Image (tube, rainbow, N blue to C red; front, top):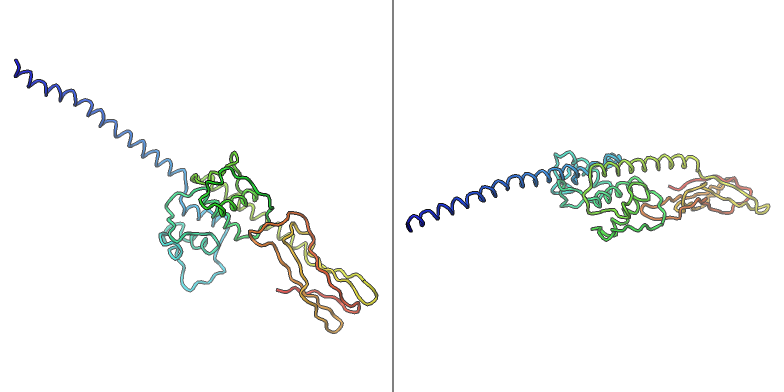
Length: 290
């Protein structure tokens, strides 16, 4: 009787343990599959660093047409972990030569954050500038989340003023990964901003050639005023650099200066002028210093 009981107990234990073991093993596989699917979905909704740089370069039309290289450039000349055969390789070369900051050890197969994309986009826009910008400071609620504090904050401030990005409930979400739709929207607006500004600038330049006005002070002397016409901000200036007198002609030399990239100027219509005095017997002609 006792011997039968001893033999039966292990069999009962084995039988009781077999079901939970099978059940736990069955639950492992579905959980792993779910995690893998979530990771794949996540990866499908973001862009990597290489794709981001490629988008920016192509949208802004950046190029290296005016640069002569001693040897054919490669992406690895600028970033050691770049792939010279990757689709983004040529854009890395162009970006590096157009003011877009790239770390020597940057890896291009990692997801790009909104901060990284915005900073690179701003640097690319600046290369096509300069652009006037008002001095108003915008409060970004999550500005403390910027990794590159001042540089990124200034970049996002500029992009907001350019109409390229907008805050979401006063936040920018700098550490969130940028999605393809977000990146496309940003570069589309950036390209439109650059195009519109260039068209306005070209039209304005044609309309604002330097003009000269002479007004008699007395019988012997005239006031000579050079004007650049109306300008959108205080960054445009004109200065008289000298006067050359020869055979009844006074050649008034002048120099023009335009807004510097990254600087802020008063946003108001101005008329840059420069004034000098010339004898009334001289004919005034203008000559721009290069």
